[in-house]
Length: 511
Ligand code: KIV
Ligand code: ZN
Image 1 (spheres, protein in one colour):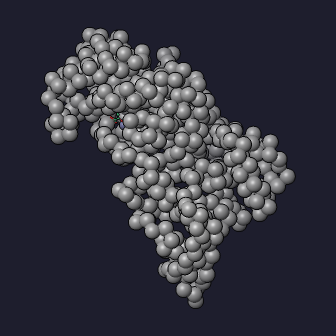
Image 2: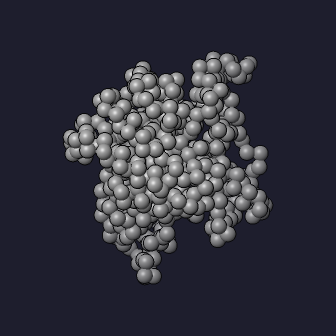
Image 3: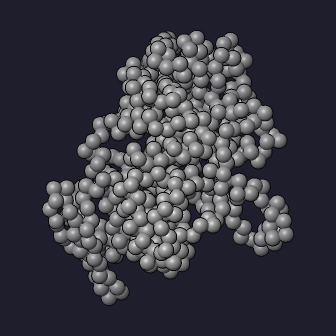
């Protein structure tokens, strides 16, 4: 069976999902988990886009072993040099550069002729090649490009030394039969095609990203670009778990192997969802909460008699198993640390102490602490951005005959303690209005959801929100046994992210 390279772009294309921004520590945890799962290539970010992205890519290159670490660069000399600066310390570095080839992009966006585009693609691959032996080139919007011109560009970049040529369906427009024919056509018509590995990068605008990627494999592609939970620009990217499990379950149709340890899939999905604040829809293939749930009587009857009647894969194959280790009030620091490491969280001694304190507080209120509780503790206590404004106290009065009223006490960046109060249509509204009176940041709340982390009356309530500000979306998460406190924390989390970005980030280039 032939080996397919799994190229994960959760930290780059995935992070382009609205509100999915992560900090360096979060990205490092995810990169380590991807490497542990056996991802061949980790696209760690787009170094020139901001100092924060550069730092995250550099740290991943320095610390994550066992996978190729790739940095994205537009076909600009400064992008390529910057990507190299960020990844050069990696065990196996790769520069990935891209340039549009469709007439629609050439004419309306990059305003170049085909001749200029061809020359630029050549020159930038040659420049990348002077830095790094492993160079990937993507003709952006390939599926809407003139196939003859596309082949010309592909031939030219291979001549300049591109080792991987990635064919992106940038706008999620293609279909499996069409994409199969495109890949096959390129492989047959480009004379030096055998000198490079062909890759595909499919977006999910029509819900066909996984099907298109699998069709491309049958046509001769040998690298698939994908993200955990399928997150990414607009409707997202091809989902790693879907292609990997399709290859695993249907090896009769797809005679390929990957280096992925499938039992790490569920854990990785949870980690990414936790850090990005993007929930996995319950009916999501492979990792959704309902993916292995059987509701109808007929199905349950079948499953009880023989699992294979209604299940095509075993939940254990993606690592979905009930933890045998239940933590509780008597669990020690060691067991706590080990379980977190198992779940992919690698905490510094200081973070571990904070999280352990929070664990003990929770264990006083709740008998059994599950993995989901631990995830909520880490996201809330440890991985939240530096508290620019710190919520010290929140108090609410409400009820069916009361006007909801909230009082908040907030510590400002220069140490002042400010208190204010507000009325609202409900307790959460009152809290948010009171916070707004202290932190005067223009923003709009666009989403609010509250979920119970586990079952039971003593469960942690987890609030996820999205706010828009400065033209961007920020997610905020907060967890507490009191959902009003969790709501206040989520709002502070999102506002602190907005303020952190305002302070440190330069304009992110559009591409
Ligand atoms: O979708 C796309 O075309 C991309 C490229 C940068 C590969 O993300
Ligand atoms: Zn993309």
